[in-house]
Image 1: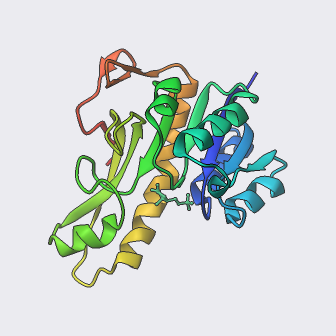
Image 2: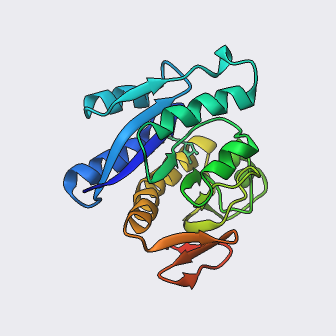
Image 3: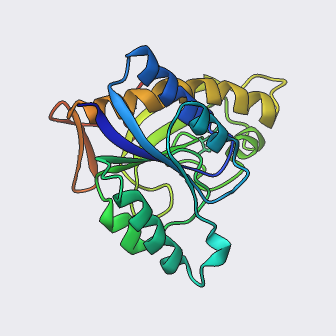
Length: 213
Ligand code: GRF
């Protein structure tokens, strides 16, 4: 049986598409049981429907608190009994109870070389700081924003004429490689989180995770 996952999105869903493509090509033995978005117009919902994947829209504005929304989200996710929850551009701060419930079985992708540039506008911040190297990290989700154990990072050069848009495009291409890779490791039971450390093939990874390049 393929490894069951649920993917959470808020936008374009190009990382979702990378997972769909790799599962269709047979590179990744997963079944995406559902795609859930907090935004009704997220293009990722169209990508999911085109691939025949069940979708849900849960509007966070209809809930009176973060905790109430997260509780409904948890119920929605758990009806599909995923072994892994994949955040792919899900633009929500998560409550502590929610992150605790999925501790060790929820991944996120963040467009920076963590621990640098947690939060938003990471590409512009890296350019403004005069960095020569930028990149992307896949990490386990913990209660603190963008602070869970890093699993894998990929790097790219920041060129002289770089803009936030051109840098985002380069980083996106890397995202579509390393996110499916991390999901594959997890689905093959090679990757786990122990005491807020990422372990791959029984070896604790460095604080910056596995270096893809
Ligand atoms: C990506 O840049 C990812 O790193 C960040 O949100 C964006 C999602 O892009 N967490 P997409 O919706 O997968 O195209």
